[in-house]
Image (cartoon, rainbow, N blue to C red; front, side, top):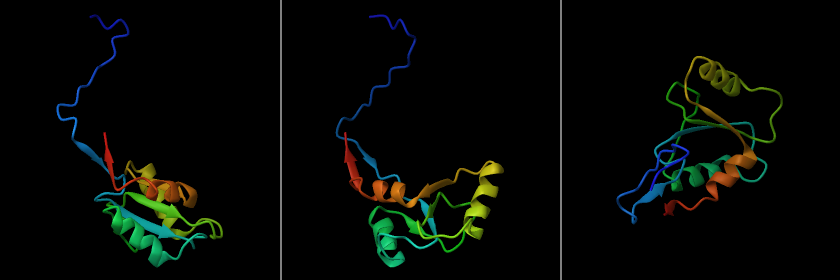
Length: 110
């Protein structure tokens, strides 16, 4: 069979292999108050997904979660945006995106 579109086809050798949660082994920082849960509840959700919390944004930060109840740009968001412009891979998410991510099963079966 030929591949007319010249697309790369990837076969996974182990169909029982599972994918991990996007927060697994990631460093997460919250800024601003969350409207749907306390910071403590959000921390428990992150830890249940295998992630860790940081108090400040650093080069090791993977995600910055922006609470809905924030006023303007926080110093944490500003620092994250600076690091992104310097080439660091930091995802800045609004609270709704965070809620969607924590709703993903902790281990995703193929």
